[in-house]
Length: 625
Image (cartoon, rainbow, N blue to C red; front, top):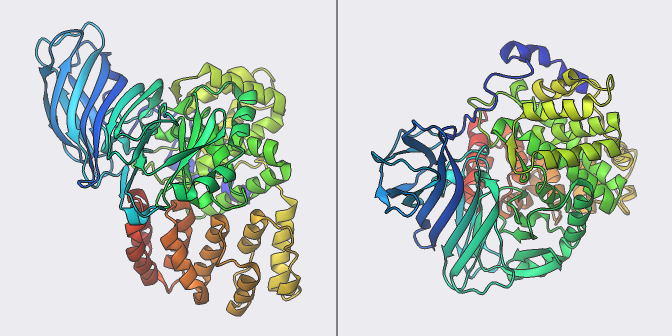
C-alpha cells in the first residue's frame, strides 16, 4: 500500500515544486498582520463575560515594538469584532487617539484592522495600543452553552477554541503562530462561576466574579484560551489536577490518574517541564476536538471518559505538546506537522512507558490504517507534511496526515539512528528552539547538522525531504505491526465467512483497540442479520467507548444497517468531537441512500455543536453529490 500511494509523487511534482525549500515558505498566508514591521511582546486583556448578550467586551492592550522605523500603519487580525476606539501611548506620556478602520472582509481570514499612528508619535522603544471592543455572538472561537447543554443543567458555560485562526474572533491581535507574546488578563464573570485561562490558574481561587491571570512564558495566539462555568478542582498529583463540572469531576480524576506520571516520564527524557502546573479541564460534549494543548490547562473532551482508562493516550498527546508545539512552535500552518507529528511520536513513547509496548503498537497500527484510509480522499497536494497551503483551510486541509505521517517519520529516524541517540537529538532540539516558532526548513537544517551529518551515509537530507515535500509514504516507511489486531482481522473474516459462530468469538480479554479493529476489518457484504448478531453479542450500539462507537456507527451508516440508526442518531446528538462524528456523517452521505437522513440528523443535533463542528459538517454534507 505505501508503494501505491507513493507513486502519486510524480504527478504532484508537476503541480507543486518538489524543491527542498519552497519560495517564501516562512510567510503566513492566513494572517493580515504586518508582523515584520510591528511585533507584539505582551497582551493585557480586561474583559467582562456577558452570557445574556453572548459577548465579551472590554479592552485589549498590545505592547508592541516597531521593527521598521518608517512604518506608520499597524495591521491586526479580527473577525466580526466591534471596535469602539483605539489609543496609543508610550512611557509616561498621555494616551492619544489613533485613527482606525476595518478593511475588506475575507470569508476565511476575517477582516484586517488598520491602525494609523498619530503624527509625531515616535516611541523610542515599546509602546502600547489599547483597543476597546466587543465580540459578536457568532464568534467562531467561542461557544456559549445554555445550562441544558452542560452536565449539571443549572448554569451556562463558555469556552474558546482559538486554533487555527480563531483567536482573532475574540481578541484583535497578530493572529499568527510566528508571533509569541506573554499575557495578563482581568476577567469579570457572574459570581457563581469560575473563570480559567491558559495561564496560572489557582486551584484554590475563590468564586467572586473577579479573576486575574498571568502567562509569563511567550505563547502564540492560537494558545490563548478562556473557559467560564460551574467547574471545580480535584488534585491528581503535586503538579497536576483536573477541573470539571461536579457531575463528572471524580470520574475524570480517576480516568486520568496517571497524568502526573506522564509528566514526570516525559520530563525525564525530553527536558524539564517549563510551564508550572499542568491541569486538565473537562469540557461539555460540544467541544469540537479530542483535546487542545492550551499551556498549563489542556481542554479535554468528555468523550474520552470511557471508564476503563483505555483512551488516555489523548492526555499523553496534549501533555507532550508542552514540548512540541507550546515550547517549540510551527511558524506557519504549513508547518503544523512540527507540532502534531512530533507530539504523536512523543505520546506513543509515553504510552509505551506507562502501558507497555503492545498497547502502544496497537495505537500505532490503528493510526496507520486510518492514515491509509484518509489518503483515499485527501488530495495528493495535501499529503505532503509541509504542503503549499495557499488557498487551503488550515482547519481541515490535511486530515490526520500531519499527525500520523509525522509520527512515522520520527519513528523511521529513531530506527535508523537508535533510540538513545534520537532521544538526545530531540531533547537538544527542544532546548535549542525553546520559545521560538520555526519552519520545516529550520527543522530540516537542524536535523541535517545535528543528526544526519554526525552519522554519514546512514540517512540523507534528500530522503528526509521525501517525507516533507512529497505525497503518500516513501517505500521504506515503517509499517506498524500489532499481533492482536492482526488476529482480530483474521477473526473478522472467519466470522463473516461463517467459519466461526458469533458465540465462539474469542473476545474474552479483548480491549477497545481489538474490538475497533474487528469492526474495521468486516468485509462489505456482511448481511444485516449477522451485523445484528454481532451488535447484540458485543454491545456495540450501547458502547460507552467513543472510539468503538466511531468505528461501529461509521460501519452502520456505510452499510445502511437501519436497525442501529436510533442508537447512531443518539450518538451523533451526544458527541460533538469532529473526529468522532464526521466519519459517520460522511458514510451516511455517501452510501447512496441517506444524504437526506444525514442532513435531518444534523439539523436536529447542530444546536449542541461548536461553530467549528457545524462548519465542518455543513461543508461535508454540502460537498456530497
